[in-house]
Image 1 (cartoon, rainbow, N blue to C red):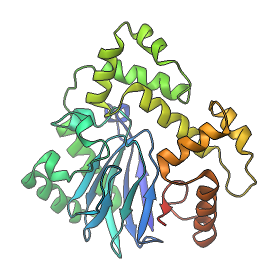
Image 2 (cartoon, rainbow, N blue to C red):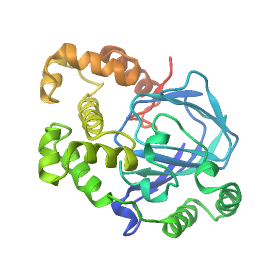
Image 3 (cartoon, helix red, strand yellow):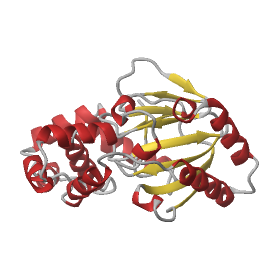
Image 4 (cartoon, helix red, strand yellow):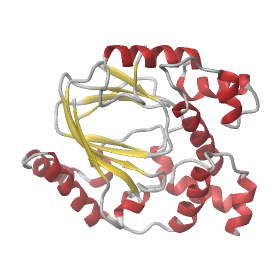
Amino acid sequence: MEYVSRVPRPPLDGLIDDLYYLEGASPYPLLTLPPAPSALLIVNLAAPFRVRGGSDVETSEYADGCVVTTPTRAWEFGYPLRTRSVGVHFKPWGLAPFLPMPAAELCDRPVTVEQVWGRSATAELRDRLASADGPHEMLTLLEEELMRRLGDAAGLALVRHTSRVIAATAGAVAIDDLRVSAGVSSTHLARRFKELVGVTPKRLARTHRFTAAVFAINPAEPVDWADLASSAGYFDQAHFGHEFRAFTGLTPTRYVEVRRRFLRENPGHALDGWPLPAG
């Protein structure tokens, strides 16, 4: 698969981790995406893909693309035989200025791009992207579209600052300390987070802690689970295992087995490092 990404120019870089282009055949028809402290927008330029969100029982098809805020559990993504898309990896708060609805409405509930930006505007954007001369021009067009759509979001400065503190501590910060530092009530802080991130500060901290623990795993080496759990700030190994299953549906050891399989069968693949074969 071909994967091209870059960081957008200011002020988008304060909202977005990267813009990306993806094309080719996936190594597996169905992948599991463990939750991460970020939001995602995909503009699809190939056959429809399939998504089963964390709260969904059934899989749905997405022709024009999808939008999802910070998830609380794993979700499944089914590629067509050949995929072609551009997308945006947003910081946890970064999607809010582009949404016509509270972020909480999209948490674990992926929606189509046209549900967010409208049918005609989405169709026009897809046409321009499909006609572009290569990945870099496509990312420029996407960046220009985002600049045009950039709006205001009440409370963004508060949520951005608090989210950065959570990220800097990998989730190991007392939520009450955040409230006191911000000078607001816990209710106000939680409400703003739900509106702009989709989850509460406590839930975002859990996601950061889980993500830090997962990225500390080297699947090529034996894993000392007790040490890893302690280093990530979990009370004990049992708590870590419970949290891992709640986020992914897998035990930690099963996760490593699947990661090793992915690495063995697809060394150096563009998707290495986070998505996993489903089942």
